[in-house]
Image (cartoon, rainbow, N blue to C red; front, side):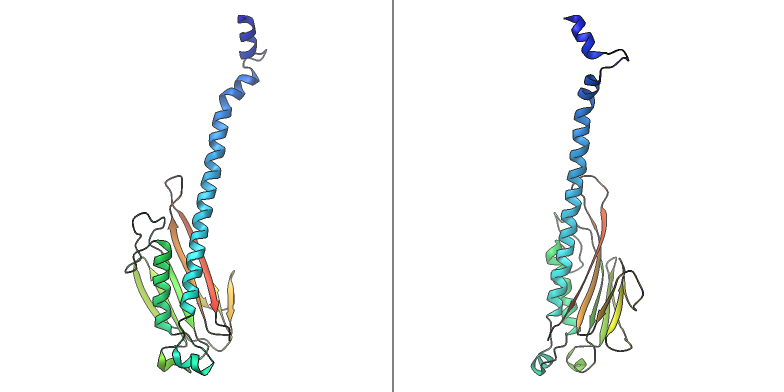
Length: 209
């Protein structure tokens, strides 16, 4: 019996392959489980961020002025669109609406975003539909400025942290009708681990009429 046990534990080279399997199998299972769980966690948060940006941008694009709607040529109320975008972003990401700081239990840090409203012309500027306005929320500070496209259609270049006029870049979108474009950048907490994952997602929503 003792000889049988020795044969199981050792072969001619020292340690039995069976013994190595017994030792390392639990470690292999733990490593695989950790990897799969982490991937699922990151993917879930990625979907959450994309969904929040999409919902917020679509809600913003619906802020059409009454007079432009009545005329059959809808234009987006610039300030209202930004307000709704920010409100929806906060609601869908578990953030404080006032300053976009995370609420208790939120999986995201305070985001940065760039949000543009583009209206193709100034026909209804008097009622709030400005030609093109850019809002930048960066590290808790909000600024906005007017943009002056050369004509319509107009192209924008989208990066992880900015949206600019132009047509040369890795990601571009060309707008021929009133639209909003947004990019949101934020640190997402991992399901497992301590280091956050930085993610950026963008969305362009055009009016169709």
